Image (cartoon, rainbow, N blue to C red):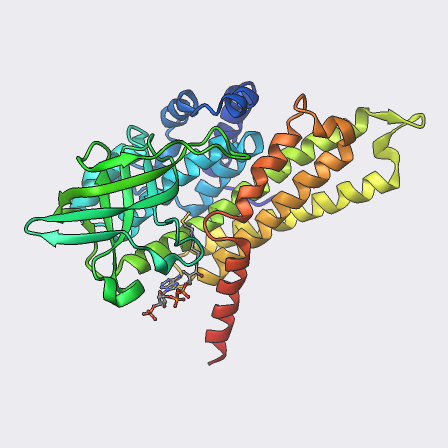
Length: 382
Ligand code: COS
């Protein structure tokens, strides 16, 4: 379907598609098997200027928005969710600075993020604070001109590989979410180390580690905004990034669908290509419809975010939940259409199905997204 992209948006899409086809597809299986971080591909993405898409020009970016970011994420996700997660998590890590950072912080960090010189990661989740994000226990105590951080963040995408970390920690333990604050912590700061790299079912090219803070002292100026607004920083960050997770769902679904159609045209059973059987056609028809509906919603929400709308919480949750459920459903059905072949590593759809599962879990489970949508509906009724 024609989404009336501008010439520039078509260029971004084509560039991301070219990187996906030429640089990612040939190595995705190996990256998955070896759990290898895709540094070579990150360098290509940096050279193509795609890290700076959503960063304002005054801070070295291209000055585009969520929409362009979603287009790039979708194309990379068509080839490999492990790679696209690495790329998209960088935006997630940058949003706290972009949305709430001071001009000095933006000047200091955003140009390197835009150029791809430094990767960023976002640290909110902890062992006992996943869906219950307000339950974090990591603390940041002011001591003179420094904050002292203690605690452990869990399952942090780009952990160990990123140079810059945006971290949510409690400056006042008695106040719950209102006692949380956001900080910038650089790799190499004494007292800041990484746990082991997690072994995952999917997105195995991406890095996932613990972040361990033991009396880690950072300059007072590294607080983002001010004490007490860390939870808002985290929630607004997620409001901005969840559409991108939706774009990952669209991309992986499209990638798996393309494989399923190609296979169904070639595979002959009972004397006919299996695509000629109505049972297969119906599955493919549902997959195609799902993908188009998900894409339309993700694009609409990304444009809504870029319009500067104040409250996008409900809509970004809708894009995330719908498009990632589509991602799971379509990849699962692509395996089904391809039968035994779909289950084999020789074809990419088994990896796509494994990869897609995380989309229903990270950046807030799809059950939490439904809570968020429900809460918003309740508020509107008041
Ligand atoms: N924008 C601005 N403020 C928000 C907000 C948003 N999107 N969502 C919540 N808040 C505010 C609330 O208004 C409330 O403020 P007050 O204390 O001033 O009233 C505060 O934050 C706490 O909100 P709430 O009471 O809804 O928090 P809960 O403890 O019930 O938790 C959340 C609900 C939103 C945290 C939960 O539904 C959620 O999203 N969990 C998933 C977290 C997540 O995505 N983790 C992934 C980690 S990053 S990969």
